[in-house]
Image 1: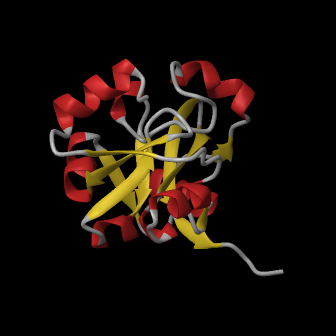
Image 2: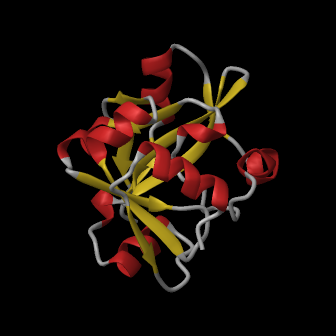
Amino acid sequence: MIPTVIEAHLREKHRGFEHHHHDRAMTAQDLAAADHVTGHRVAKPVVVRLGDRLALAVVSAVERVSLGMLEEATGEHAELVPESEFAARFVPCEAGAEPALSLFGIPIFADEKFLHADTVVMQAGTHEDSVVLDTHAWIVREHVQPVANLGTRFALR
């Protein structure tokens, strides 16, 4: 079940959102499999510190965040933040199931490749719930700032 505060935000800002309930999906790639979509459509939010503030860097499930590109786009030092330092900021979400929504009061930066997709899929506060949002509406209504090449492919070993 989507946490009440998240559902209320979605109903207010994204009236046409789709809710999917599925088996437990702990990673963004698991979510792609559970929702039967390519990992390129799944938004994976990564909590970063930009200077002295938290932000979300959103890339596809098949990519990792390029901190260098985020630094170039913002002019601020960027670093990954351990879950123990940000979990309280995303209550009532389960750890690792935070959606990239403005209701948490932190800036959202997303790889500009999302601009080429009609819809985006993301966790909805639990590991069993996801939502499908219109990409353009998500960018506008959640004040998402596109960043070129924010996501980079995982290197094969």
